[in-house]
Amino acid sequence: MKKVMLLTTALILFLIIGGCSDNNDETGPDPRVAAFRNTLENSGFAVSEGSTKQINPFQFIHDGVIDSCAGNNAGQPYKCFPVPLIPGEEDEQGRKEQGVFRLQPYEAIVYVGPTPPEGDYFSYTVFLWMRHHNSLIEKGDWLFAALGDPTNNLTIKTEGGGSPFEKNTMIVFTPDEGIYNRILAAAELAGYPDSMINLFVIPSTNPIPLTNLGLGRESDSMLVLVRTANFKDQQKGNDYLNNNAYGTVFRVTPGSPPALQPYEQPPARNRNSQKETDLIPDLENGLERLKTAILVQTEHVQFRSFESIRWFFDSRDVLPDDPTSPAYHQFVAGEASDTPYLRTAENGSAANFTLGMDDLVIVYGVNHAATGIATYSSLSVYGDWQTNQCDPPSQFIFGCNDHVWNGVAGMNSHSFVLNGKSGAEEYIPGDPVAPYLYAVKVKRICAPGEKFCVPVPQPGDDPAHKDNPYYGIGLTDPMLIGYRAYLNPATKSGPSYEDIVFDRAIWFKTK
Image 1 (cartoon, one colour):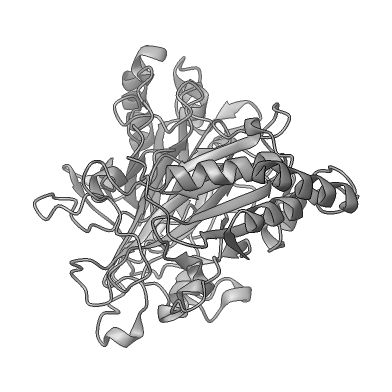
Image 2 (cartoon, one colour; image 1 turned 135 degrees about the vertical axis):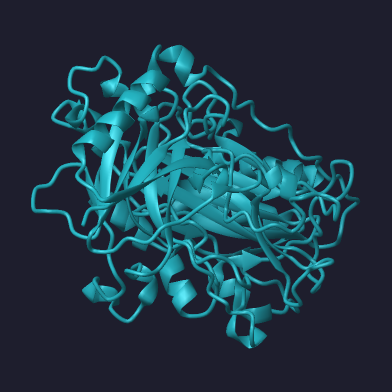
């Protein structure tokens, strides 16, 4: 009887508002959103509304909110979900404004609305932001570790199927199966088909607790991050980023705590596919030929060769609160399984360099998009010094003594090829492997019209941010190159570290 009454209420509201339409349709907002909220509230939930917001790590670090840009992917924007507080909840350290929230083990965050505009990639991921239980730092340890595989453009369920971009979807982020089932029932009563509803599990047991849920100061804090990359229509991309009401965010809280039905952590997606060296014979020999040609054709008085190594622990290794683990309370800077993360190294250890006016770095490697093992790949230039904001503790909110890792410049695989030829073919023309390789110069100033070149700004070079030093890297500041490769179409996750050939770089002193 209760279900019939809920259905009747939802249908009446649905018909009064005017039927079904897309959330981003010119005829107005999707009336199912109001019907959904009404149905939830009639079934005993308290529902409060949040928003979607673009976040700027450069401004956050400048304002003393964070102490690292966390290896931001240069040129690619981010949004988060500022989640409303519930009555009586403390907004400790002003975290709500930054999109950081705590969650009770029987609550949910729900996103309903359109997916981002067309591009190479998007994803929705919940991260364990700060761990307060047994923290090494009084204010809590900034981990920034993914709580599961991202819901990305290859895995998301959307209304109507087909292209996943600008399509209505619903994502329920929750640790509790009972709560999810009740939300699912309310969504279906409001007119949302099950075929567009996604579950993102916030793991609370596996079988030991992986998250410390609750509202107290010992509880973990979290962040929902929306990543996007390479919008096809930049104006549509800008409109999406600047619209804080792009879709609807609800915090859903039952009127009284139910018996818990916690989810275990879902198994990780399989990232193993085919090795690039099997897909493209002679690939590694081609890289050696490219290295030799770069050294021969680049005038220099000194050089250093860099390989690359894994940059971060896997988030899954960070989540268990195990003091014996080498990943215990380690900062992983937003690591998630949609890409491998590499950084420059020498002799198997992390290494950096400085870039003066007479210095040049040539970055080279395999174009993972060309081999077919990634949708797009990229390189980014990062500052690699520590911000030293631990003393006094009042100077920072999130983080302490992490490296700045401000991604100030970069290039992705769309620009590794120009007029049908890769940058590697500038050095080894006619080589059968060259179309699968890339070569890019990184230096302070690129000549007008210079191909395959990334200029690295100094602080103050950007007039719009002249007072923010994190938009650049000084001539004597240490820096590194970071590498990513997003989404193997075969696995719908980032290629495995075992399947890719790691990127390389050579630093030159030219005078």
